[in-house]
Image 1 (cartoon, helix red, strand yellow):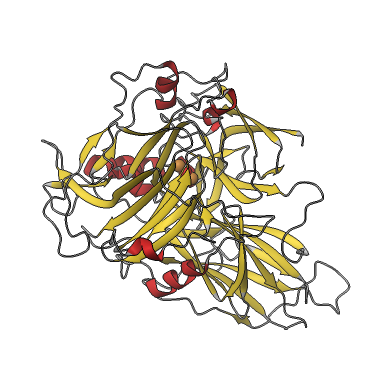
Image 2 (tube, rainbow, N blue to C red; image 1 turned 180 degrees about the vertical axis):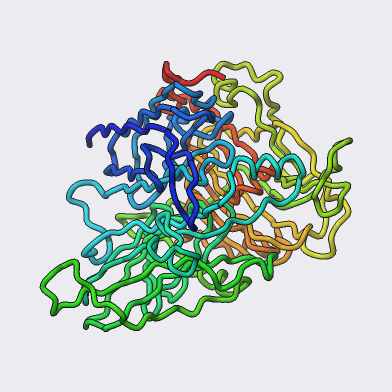
Length: 552
Ligand code: C2O
C-alpha cells in the first residue's frame, strides 16, 4: 500500500445549466468534483483549502475511518469547519473496503454542488468476484437549482416550510436532452457491441430517491456501498441519496443501429404530481463497428426510452431491496453479529413544533413548523465539535449522554395520525461500550403522510437483517431475521410506513453521526449521534487529533 496525496481547493466557479449561469462552490473549479482513487489498504491525505466565503467541511461517505474520526467531516460532530483562507488535511487509511463510495461537503446544503467519486480498487493482484469489465464509468446523480441553495435552506429553516424542489436532476452534472436547452449538456456512454461495462452509480441528489433504467438493457447488481453482493439482474433499480451501486451493463452483441436513454426518475410516496415526465436522461450510444474512427457515431438513429416505474411504486422498491444479499463466501464473509449486547428501537420521521412567537411559519398549519426527529428528539449541534469535547473530556454544557433508547411515548406508528407529534430538541449522545454488538430497529412514523428515509450511519457498515411494513413486532419479526447473508451497507431506506432492523459491531471508537440523507430532513432534525468508547488495548483507542484540526 502507498500514500496518496490530493489537493482540494474549495473555490467558486461559473457554471451554465438550463440556459443560465450561476456561481457555485466547487472543488478545484470542477463540477462534479475530482475523482479520488485509492487502493484498499492505502493511506489518503487530502489537503483541503477553503477559498470561499462559506465555512467548509468534507465527508468521505462510507469510509470506515477506523480510529480516525477526526477525518470524518460532519461539521460540529467530528470537527469545526475549515474557515475561509484556512486548510485542513484529511488523513485516513482505507481498511477492508473496495468498490465505489463518494465524498461531499458536510455543512449546510453545500453538498448540492460539492461532491465527487471515490474509487477504491481491490488490493494489487486481487480480482473482482465477477467478470472483469471492459471499462468502468462513474454515473453520479445530482440535483440542480436555479436559485442559490444556501438561500433555500435558510428560508426552509426560518419558516419551517418545505424548500422548493430542484429544477433538474443531473447525471455527472448534466441535465440531459429532456430539459430546456440542455441537449448539449447530456452525459453519453459510448459502448462497443458485446463488451461489458461497470457503472459506478452514486446518488448525490439532495432530496430524492431515484429509479434508474437503461432502455432495452438490463443491469446486473454486483456491489452496494463498497461491499460485493450476490449478483442479480434487473430492468430498474432504486438508489437512495448516500447510496452507491455498481452494476454491470453488457452491450448488445451486434450493432443495434439505435441509441438508448439511461433515465433516472424520483421515487416518492407523498408528492404526487410534483414530478412530470421531464427527468434526467443520459444516452447510451454504440460505436459503429464499420466505422474506422473511434469517435464517429451515426446520426439520426432511433432513440429508445425506458418505461419508468410510477413515482410511488413501493412494490418495486421492496422487491429490489429484498434481493440484496452479501456474498458470504470464505473470501468475503458476512460478519453478522449472531448475538446482541445492546438493543434499541428508534422512531424516525417527521413531526411538528410550535411556530416561534413573531415568526411566519409554513408548516402543515400556519401555527406550526415542520420538524423531524429520532425518538422525538431533533439533534441540535453545538458551536464546538462533539468529538473534541468527548476527547478532551469536557462534555459539560456541550452534550448529554442520555439519548433515549426507545421512543419517549409508544403509539401505533402507522395508523391514524397520533397526537404526540411534538418534537423536542436536544444534544444527547447514545453511548456504546467498545465492541458492543448492536441491534437497532428503525420504525418510520407515518405522522405527516408516509415517507421513506435513507438513514446513513457514519463510521460503520451495518447488516440489514430484516425489514417490513406496519408496526415492528418485537416477538415475531426477529424470528424471520436473516443472520446468514444480509446485505452490508452504510445507508438504508427505512421503508415508508414500515421498519428496518440492522446489526453492527461497535468496533470504532469516536462520535458518529447518523441521519436521514434527505438533506431537508436532516435540516429539520432527523439526526442523532453515537459515542463509542475506547477499548482497553492501545489499538482500540481513538487516535489523538491532528495538529491542524480547525478551531471553532
Ligand atoms: Cu453522506 Cu453524513 O453523509
